[in-house]
Length: 87
Image 1 (cartoon, rainbow, N blue to C red):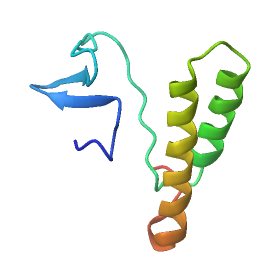
Image 2 (image 1 turned 60 degrees about the vertical axis):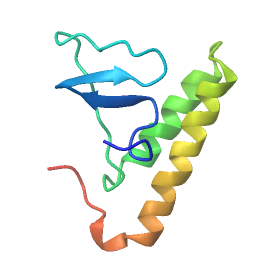
Image 3 (image 1 turned 90 degrees about the vertical axis):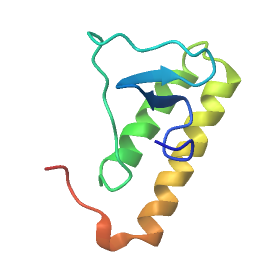
């Protein structure tokens, strides 16, 4: 998994690992993945951003979410044929 695909985590030795701290996500902790091809993903990210903005999240986290929304929107524009509802 390259950094463009997922900027915060990497897949290393069968684990998701925080790129900055090097800490693994424990195997018993659920993880939820949104793909850019999901027609609902941008709306979900926008809702998440609104929740984050209502809290005390670091500016870097807010910026990362906003940037990811832009990347998802760009994907939808560049690849309309790949957009779909989740299976």
